Image 1 (spheres, rainbow, N blue to C red):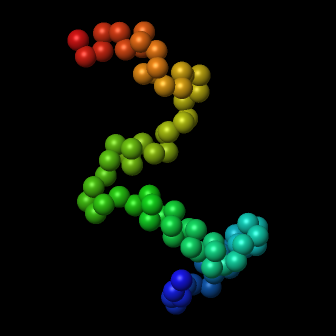
Image 2 (cartoon, rainbow, N blue to C red; image 1 turned 60 degrees about the vertical axis):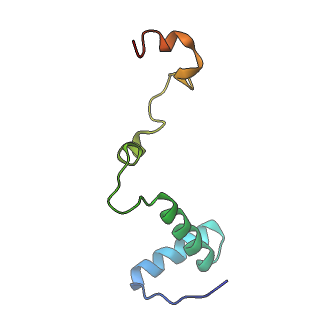
Length: 80
């Protein structure tokens, strides 16, 4: 594994240290985890999908069937 050096504002370092302490991990482990998560969620340059736009809405509607495609009655008339 390689090491890199990054300059960060003091207040951000303090926030990182607090978050690492709460999660019982090192500063390095927290930074790696955060960077991996951020890069996984990153869209290709100039491309925004429908999911990217509605990401915050996923799972917010309660009381619906798990998957509407499971039950044929929910597909009646679709595509006609």
